[in-house]
Length: 260
Ligand code: AVW
Image 1: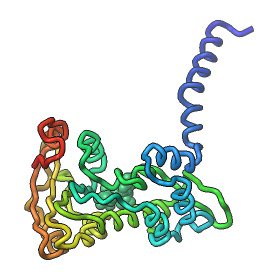
Image 2 (image 1 turned 45 degrees about the vertical axis):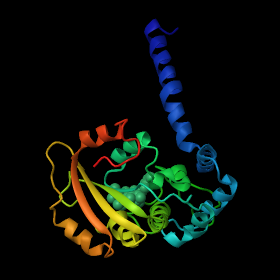
Image 3 (image 1 turned 30 degrees about the vertical axis):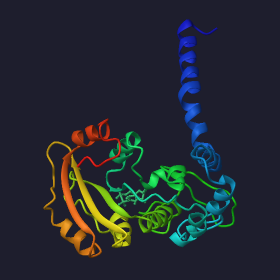
Image 4 (image 1 turned 135 degrees about the horizontal axis):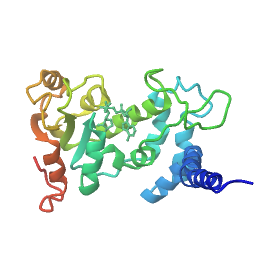
């Protein structure tokens, strides 16, 4: 016979299994397709089955280190951006900060607000040679190989998004690091190089830091940035604390206009 204590322990383990471990395991094994289609349908306005089939042909059945960014050309073509030339925001090393910010500012457009950015935000996927399956774990990162399915997708999507950039563009960079502008980042190596005058009128860098900033707008890396920037695009940089930046997103007087 089991003692009362044993029953209590068994009960506790059962509750833990039901409430934490099982849901996490199920979530991890949810097929990517389901997440893709569900998010795509929530987004509305696109043929989600068509997008899925164009998307998965980029990597399914392929060596996950041999998926170049061009593999995603078809899915990018199947999800054209809605013409909307305003308030485009780019970021580097500041994803979480910007994600919180744009939740409150509907009219600011980031890549994660376009259909494919929204559908694939934060996900991991890859295929395998000789298999029709999609894996969502054990996929190679950029440390293993550059042409991995996730990295190549974001580089391809960022290229399209930056080609589409127009008007006054903002990029949110981090003042908490020594080199806020990294020429090897997606922002530095892809997006910045696609901004073209006169389509893009200006680029404003918003350098956001916690209390004791590591770098400011005089940082030498910004000279490298300006060298890369197409002549004719007006450049400016402004420093801001994280709390000011967050306050700015909830300023009811400025639902859309710039806050810096
Ligand atoms: P980083 P980057 N979900 O902070 O300048 C998951 O150094 O390189 O910034 N991963 C993503 C997402 C996303 N929504 N977006 C980008 N990534 C990957 C897209 C990507 O491989 C935006 F338009 C990137 O290298 C930004 O202006 C890494 O996460 C620009 O690219 C973030 O590295 C940020 O790329």
